[in-house]
Length: 69
Image (cartoon, rainbow, N blue to C red):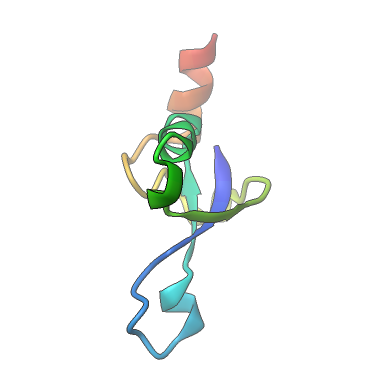
């Protein structure tokens, strides 16, 4: 699980809406990396559990850790 800044609503007035910070599971991060120029992730950081589950597929950190074992 990674905390990522992604492209959001670019027509919004707020930078937080244009570039929201969300949690993404490792599978979604990898899938985005395969998109080439069409990627949605701007930057990747550590992990912030306060942001909840994966924004794109709703996988929880616990489910992701369990799948790796």
